[in-house]
Amino acid sequence: MPSRPAFASRLLLRTSIVALSAAAAVLLHGSPSAAHVTVTPSTATAGGYGTFSFKVPNERPTASTTRLEVVFPTEHPVTAVSVRPMPGWTITVNRQPATTATPAAGEHAAAAPVTSIVWQDGAVGPGEFQLFDVSVGPLPKSPTTLMFKALQTYSDGEVVRWIDPPAEAGAPRPEHPAPVVTVATSGGLTPAAADPVSRVLGWTGVGAGLAALLLAVAALRRRGRPATTAGGGSDVPARANGRATGVPAGAGSRAGRP
Image 1 (spheres, rainbow, N blue to C red):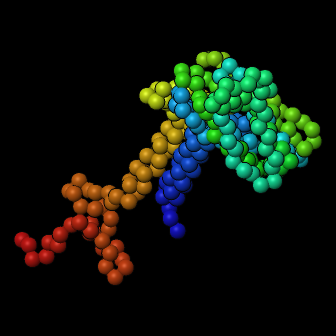
Image 2 (image 1 turned 180 degrees about the vertical axis):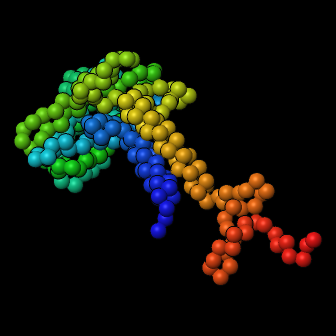
């Protein structure tokens, strides 16, 4: 049976590993309380096309999400949209009313800007999430921010409106933030910033976990290293036939020496 110090060192090591794992989970996935409608990726190249996934978690224990409407920004109209088929869901792409102007001979009528996309008749059950994928374009040619307001409808009739604009620097995070895509030139794209609170908690946990891990490793090394006497030998008594001889194990035999 291991001694108490050895057991405590191993326990500290295991605890530090658990702390590091939990901190990494916070950094990778964000705070558990931050479950809301999001879009991935949150950055795109100006002037091009992009494929985006709207992630919709179900936050109600007794109701299912049965409808999602994503409203497109009107200040930066998008005309080309394609959706990924989803079994069990009915998908409707809504556009601005067509103009009455007749295109000239040899010309094609310009597609009307998309106003929204609606997914309905399906179900996202309690404790589940669903990805709603779309390909859109062309995106604005100049750097800007696109805010896609989302309306999430539950089977009990409740509608949650994820329509709040992003918070300014230093301001509190909105309760129902809208999914946002940052459009930039190819050289100006940066990874999306995670939730500041989650980042602080995550890095704090990593620091504490690393400190505990170093202490645990040092303690285990000390436990596994034999103590030495002033003469350099081990102070653990040597044993002969299972009995201590009283002679340090590192001491050489003096038999036959003057």
